[in-house]
Length: 465
Ligand code: ADP
Ligand code: MG
Image (cartoon, rainbow, N blue to C red; front, side, top):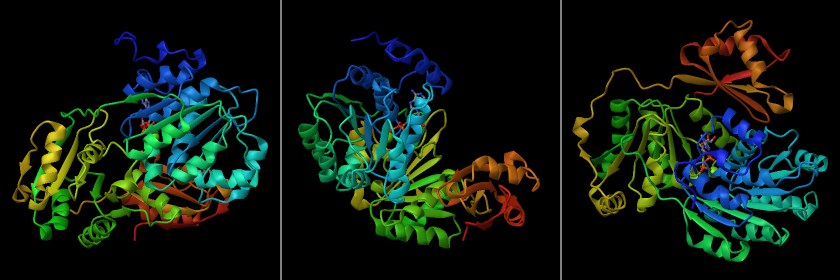
């Protein structure tokens, strides 16, 4: 065992000086607990099963290991990361690229569904060191021969629990069988359902197991429970929002139907709410996540499966519309708020029928929950709760070679807006999304529509209904 006081610095790991300098530049000084526990094992080349909650820094825990093994001089696929969804694959690719900046010319390629095969095949022909993708699309490429894995050193299964939830066991097996037997396999997961043991038995060799206990800083998450009857439940969500007035809230429901019902109720009350569930098309999911992350949507209503793994943290509030039967899931849900140095609210609605579940949560947390009454909830203001930003959608994205700077330039140049009035800019394949201060959004819509982006006229629309 290494000394506790020094083991949490990246500097103690056998990493190249350039990598350490890059980490410092990214503001990564201390390792997160899962990184401290898994990196020594992964860097030593051993197989690993690592379990820690969402947001604990698992990406860097495997990315640094696979980057350390990479032979940049050989432009062949040496590492592959399997992820459950396209968003997660995109997030992982972004994080690997950030961590790889220390070294010139590391090629990381995303191969996930929902986008055409052709450009991916073309990129593969140019060569890649690392591929990140979803199992289905990786199989497509393997079948067509556009991807081969015989030079692979490291296989990573990220969000393994979620991949199993989504029925990817056989696909993972198909891919893993095409990897060389001599390889390192790293499995990362937020929870440890049964299938993980089966996966690791079949595809990992003598893995070391690292499990991190959930521990939340109670001082940052203020938890309250409210007793409701079934006919009060959905209405109570609006009461909580008007009372606490959080800018961004994630509202968890146990079922898709409850998500839909809540969305209807919130919208009827004038809230800006969107729902995330398994039935959305990829493009719709992208749009929902973009609008929530750029603060032009107050409430994201989601099921656990839909929200898991997504990098949406730092929320002012999490509302448990239903109590989950699984106390571990409850702990995950509320861990979305009160991150970093911010405070957060975790508000739960519970009916008499759910008291057994609340008891499980109390046991898991080793303390009693704090009950409050709906009667305490009074609107903090008579003004409706509005998100601070609105989203403009520009029809034109990466395909048209639009970059965020082009849009920022158009808005701050001739259109005359201040940079502070403009929020996140997301460029996707065919569209660009710009967050802009609510008060000036219409003005921006007209000026952008009348002007030019990258020397061309563009179609723009406001995304709010
Ligand atoms: P997980 O995969 O466990 O859900 P991520 O890898 O997505 O978590 O990391 C969550 C966030 O924490 C990311 O924004 C990442 O950039 C940041 N992060 C990761 N490791 C560190 C670190 N050592 N120091 C500071 N920030 C970190
Ligand atoms: Mg992750």
